[in-house]
Image (cartoon, rainbow, N blue to C red; front, side, top):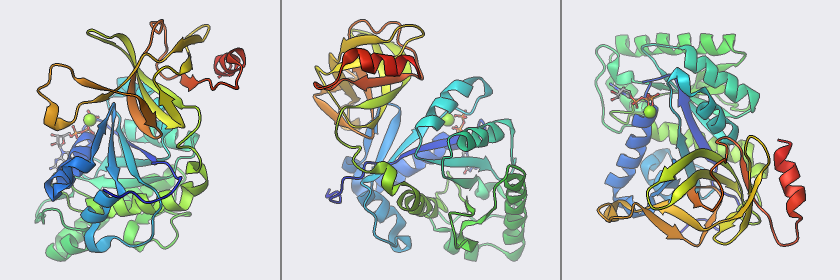
Length: 344
Ligand code: GTP
Ligand code: MG
């Protein structure tokens, strides 16, 4: 499938929010819808991430799709909502170019909703609020996969009023956190207001709207940030340090800048001195079609940002989740790069 000619890399979109508010279900829905649209081949499952190419988003959005976008797609990262996973959320948040903050409209703001907002504030990450589970509002008539405007038309006056009240509650909570916001279709300036998009991760209502708002944010806020970062020495964040049978210790990495090649010299952060080693193998998940194969991972020679990839290398047992992994290019001094990572 043709990707647009550009040097902008894929924006990383972190999905955050309180436990059970529907983060994983939303990503499943986006994957499922796009697979149902006959685009299965176009979606790439990464380590810890899912990439949705622009062509697929265009198709899901249908008539809603407007504008001229140069980004290749969106790379979604799921995060756990349970309170014990603060560090994983924070790591995801620090990586994200954009975020979706999911709030169950029936429960409103909860402790990890606020914690997520604090992470987004800390990193100044532009975000959109997905007001999820609208199908649970009493009397709601789900219109499978419909854009917001269409499903609102199908609802009674009372149900629409009920949804509006819940959205105003979210707007009030966001105001307490220092943000102006409104239902997204009532906003004209997304640099001053946070958009709230009512969705159902189960019926898919509003999901096309959510993807459109994300593309809009990516185009508005990130153009400069995303430039010239799909090539050059790779820099990533370690999400997890994992033992894999037959591979030993591996690093699950989100590569957000440049490229990794097998054989590259890398510097990896630890609690003490950074490790200097070489990439032995780069591994991606096998495509769904090959899921019955014995080996779960597929070796690749090269990956470019943004990507989720598993890195196998010698001597990485003491690598620290959350720290940086960086390629040292031929014209760079290994000690200088190690010093840079040590002082993070
Ligand atoms: P953690 O990963 O534990 O933080 O939870 P999560 O945010 O990923 O929530 P998850 O997607 O696992 O959803 C939790 C439950 O809510 C599941 O039973 C989902 O089926 C249900 N759920 C999620 N979204 C919706 C929705 O839009 N409507 C309805 N009715 N149920 C939903
Ligand atoms: Mg989940």
